Length: 412
View 1 (cartoon, rainbow, N blue to C red):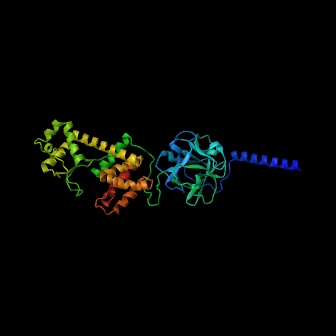
View 2 (tube, rainbow, N blue to C red):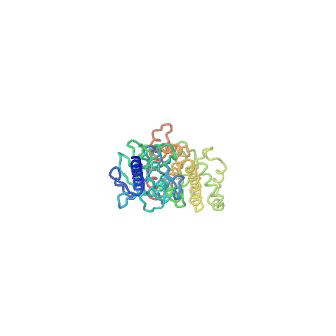
View 3 (cartoon, one colour):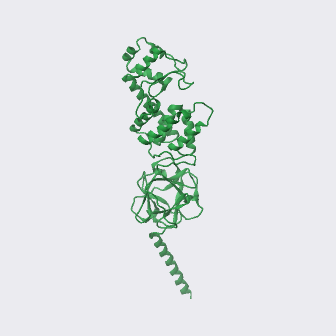
């Protein structure tokens, strides 16, 4: 009798082992009908932590790098190309590393590690995706387990692993945000504008930025157009502008004075030929803002002639690029390195100073989102602030901001 029970036990154990091996290699059906997901680039936001996104740990491009839930920052390591396979499953490829989402060792065990690898068309690199209310669930092709944020954690850099389906586990539910829509940590922003995962500022990006700000400052909101001869008298735009504003970049006060000094230092002979009586040379010896210098008609005429010489134009362009590099550095160190967001930061700061830019971008930082939609949402909030009659988000500047968004989407 004992031999019988031993034999039966051994047989049962062998059955379990064979079943386990079978499960490791056999594809399983999803627990619900697979959703139809259009191929394209997506950001995957976990329901348990709406300010985070599925991300490569350490932003690595290496094989076998693991995945975490990390604060969304528009990095390409947080963007995935999702494509449907012939068998109805999906492949999820990271945009930055070009590697695909898979399970370490093809494991079907609880807590199996999720990592990236070369696309070998293995079953453990294929996924079923199905709808669950307003979210999606991602099921392994080789088990019934789900792509999950460990313990449904809201912490930054929380581990991603495989977990048995649970009807109420928020860590198993994902929001799929197709690039071109809005990504934010709340529902207060609209989805009017596209998004971009591009980061940093190349030389061509600086040219685009120059064309954008030139257009909205003095170019009649025409991309690429700018008025090198622009002269704005004191108090024209604001009661706080005590002296003139010069050039296409709307250089005011100390910047305007620096512009004229630089033109003089680069070509003093030409300068003196235009400023025959030395009126502007005398004006350069005083502080224009503190003295509230208001140029006479004759002085205005000389200033315009100076800034429209070839030297004057070159100095204007060089000053603007130098100024923008300072702004870009501030944005990258304090907020984000997303190219589109940097361009909006620069134009906002150029318009409203650092305090104005900080006021807008601190709201974006609180939402962990720097999309054009979120920036425009923050600018809109500025209109409700009555502490000043000259807020950077005020209605009188709204067409400027909208035009900048339009140009950024089209040219950047």
